[in-house]
Length: 146
Image 1 (spheres, rainbow, N blue to C red):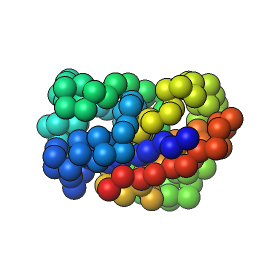
Image 2 (image 1 turned 180 degrees about the horizontal axis):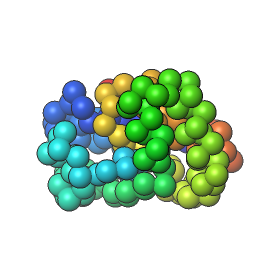
Image 3 (image 1 turned 90 degrees about the vertical axis):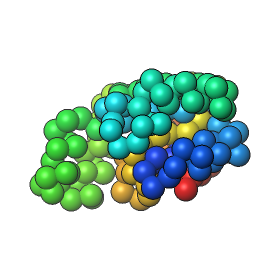
């Protein structure tokens, strides 16, 4: 099973939606804590839901349960937490929230986790994808769309 991740920064709408269509994404799972970001107009919840449905026939889900807590996010942004510390805290949070039980295999097939960061290396969407993959009954391949 393939699951994907994508960030919307450093991408125009054309590139963003083309990547989703080319990879046959079925469900975009928004793992941002705040999905009304001003960073990109097309990535705000209302606009994004519309564009996904009309341009790509993709379902939209906002799952803040797969987002970092305010404390973890603030700690990292304030540089009080290193990326390594952030990873440990966030993975613990996913475990405590039983994140593996939030999505069934049917939804995961062709799913794409969305956040704002361009690169997945230091973004929680990568951690979500890896956590979900490690708890899946299926053989999961993670693909980061750029």
